[in-house]
Amino acid sequence: MKTLYFKKENGEIKEEEQLFKQLKQSFLSLKNGDYEIVHKLFKKNRSNDQNALMWLWFTCLEDETGQDKQDIHDYYCKLFLRREVVINNKREVVVSGTKNLKTDVMANFLTKVQADAASEFGCQLPTREDLHFEEFRRQYERFNSHNDGR
Image 1 (cartoon, rainbow, N blue to C red):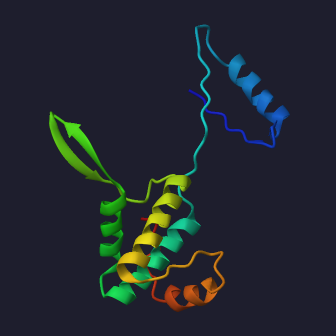
Image 2 (cartoon, rainbow, N blue to C red):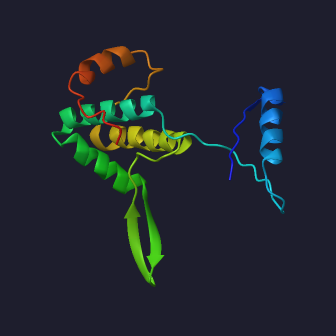
């Protein structure tokens, strides 16, 4: 199975000629048979910036609450990334981590963490767009040795 990636912006396919060349080469390399073409919206994995922001926030919450930032990570995963599954006719709770989240799901997770930290801990967690973000980043980044891709 071959996967081809392309981008469509403002109603136009980017690098259309190159995409059609790849598509033609792919078709020519196929053995005789019946095939189907499936297209789906490609969603990227969480970004390094999202991960770094999350750990910066958890470092702040560690400082504010005295709780270990890994415990804070696990707490929020359990709070916002849990789901129920049925295995062998038994309901089980499964908790996902953040490592394999797509960018849109990670953004939603971060929004929920930000809101919860404000209401539950009284901590205002800024985003990169906020006026005082650089000051916040400098304050907590030196303590943030946990940016290991989890």
